[in-house]
Length: 305
Image (cartoon, rainbow, N blue to C red; front, top):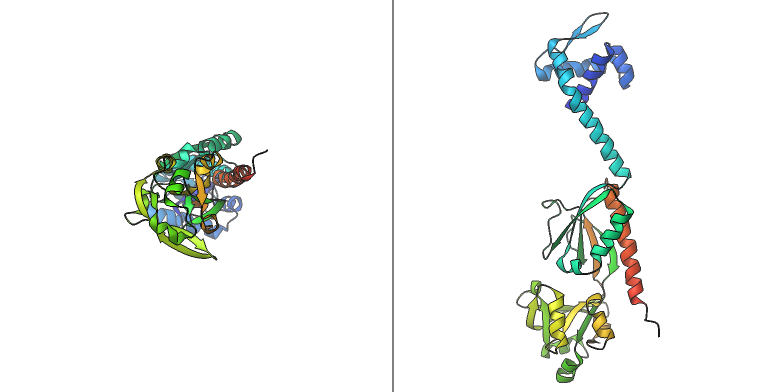
C-alpha cells in the first residue's frame, strides 16, 4: 500500500480517536483501517497507537508522526488542488521548442496573442537548429517541419507548408528554366546545411516521391542568407512559400517546376502523450491550429486588384 494512503488513514484515526469513526469518514471497512495502521507500524518498527476496547490514543511516536506529517499532508493537498486546477484551467509554464528561423516570423506574435488570452500561462521558448529530445530537455511541445518519423511522438498537423523552387530571372535566363526535376542536374543549388555534402531535393510526380541530387554552390543553416544570394542570380532555392513569396510577388524571384513540388510538408506540433495533458498545452495546441490556419488562408488569398 502507498505510504501516503497509510499516513492519511493514520491521521484520520488519530483525529477521530476511533477506528470505526475513521473507517466511516474514509469510506472503508474497520478491518481495512486496522490493516493499514498495522502495516504503517510495521514499516516504522514502532507502535503508533494505544488501543483499548473503548478508545484509541497516540503513543509518543504516534504524536510525533501526527505533528511532522501535518505540513507534509497540507502541501500534498495544496499541490493536488493546484494540479487539478491546471488540468481544467490553463496555467503554469509551457516549454516550447521551434526551429531557429521561426523566431523571425509570426511565432513570437502568436505566442504574445496566446498569453493575452491566457494570463496565467508562462512560456519558455527554445529556438534551435536541432531536434530537441522532448523527455531529456523537458519540452512540452515541439514545432517541427515534417513528415515526422518518430513513432514515440504524438503529432498534430497545424498547416501545410507549400514549397517553392525559385531563382532570380537573371539566373533562369543564364541557365534555362527546368521542365522536369531531372533537368536540375545542370543547375546550381543553394541548400540547407543539414542536407549534408550530397544534398537532394524531393519532388513528386504522379504521387510518387522523386529525390533529385543537386550541386550546392552554397549552404547555410538559415534560409534568409540563401534567399539573398539567390536574389543576386547565383543559384536556385527550394524553400517554404512564406519565405520567398514576397520576392516572387515583386518579380525578384521566379518559381519553376510548380507541378512537381512535394506536398507532404507540414508544420507539426509534436508532443509525448495524448492523455492527461495540461489545460495549458491543450489550449496552446488548439490556438496554434486555429490561428496559423487563419494566417495561412489570409496569405493564400489573391491580392485585391
